[in-house]
Length: 323
Image (cartoon, rainbow, N blue to C red; front, side, top):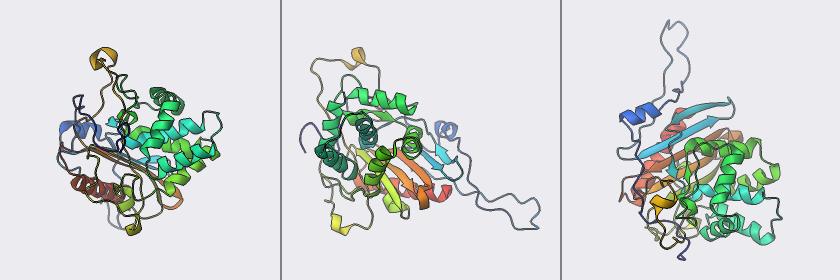
């Protein structure tokens, strides 16, 4: 990987944001979702209550925020810590793409090729090209205002090139997908979602990002994945021809201006620095009925394989509870 664009380990220079983990008071306070019921009691059963599906169980030490929005009912089917901010990793590439296509400037054939690579194979070089051209942090600020994102923040001033140090919440990512589905110009949404529906199993640097939705949810689906903090070399290089599912993944880095102090220039805290993050987001079901977003941060030192296992298992539970 080239120095300015690394799709994995990031400098651990800011203290981690407080975790919201399963089982503690903070998790219970954040979990405001309405349990999804599974059918009514048989006739003649009197006052027997409807059966409730079990709540997803977040692994000990893992922090998670998730939302499932049902487009058929127009309601949130499941939620937990939906406004908790996470380090964006590559999920912010959706905002970079929207900003590019809605800029009013012509999009060249070369840019369309970069956009395809960024969204399907999570090409970090392509993301950095668009990030610099669009004004870096100003991209996130513009998108947050235009889409009405409540929790989204740009990277700190002292990390202007680190697009993956933006902060996002599960709620804001659901809002972003709903913007593409319901409000954006069809030419914009069609191009972006079209690439996400054909996302590659293997990232450009060899990481297999078929975790989460691609491994836990039946087809059809469209996905944008995100990960950060696992090093620059995949434990096993991904092979596209061995794919049974498809996904897309993430990364970030950038140059740090010399002699600048975080405490003097910016109060934005990058969430979960020192902890690996793994995110799975997208659309699932017939007619893309469900908008699913799961953002996770795992204990420091957790391996790629274990993080993938935890995230995929939790995704499966979330889908079952919301379906």
